Image (tube, rainbow, N blue to C red; front, side, top):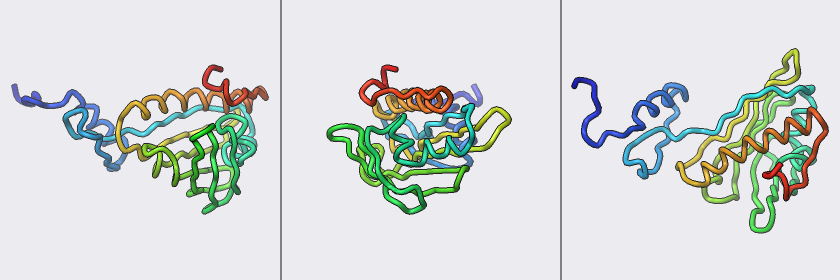
Amino acid sequence: MPGAPGPGASRYSAAATILLRLQRGRRRQVAPAHGSDCVMPDILQDFLIKSDIGRVFDAVSTPVGLNRWWTETCSGEAKAGAAYDLGFGPGYQWRAEVTKYSTRAAFELTFTRADADWTGTRVGLELSPTAGGSQVRFYHRGWPVENDHYRVSCHCWALYLRLLRRYLEHGETVPYVARLDA
């Protein structure tokens, strides 16, 4: 049948084509675990927070703000080129560099010391004001392979970003050790 995949064709071919178009030419290859070449996806979340954009920016770009919803401990200075030390419990003392900083608009960290899967990846948020608060466009880009750590991180980011929203909209904070169960 014309156009039908040949022997050994991957079931991911159509999805890879769509992702390739969506990512505007950015090409990352998944490790050959799938048996084919396909685009490595990023973790992306878009959502509204009913809070002033300045409060949202502080919560995602300052050590105090990050400790309210993501990190157990954090230190660093909110400015481009600064280093952040990010603590996630024993054995998880990571470091990142601020690679994008635009007040009330964008913040990005590039991991320089972390688990192998996270080293070199970029976590960031782009913010825009809306009538009801702030639009958040979250991303975690640069994953080297689709593996268990990637899959768990997809789930965990949804949980953490919910905590960010609950913190800003309702003043809720959850102790670090209970955050993934909240």
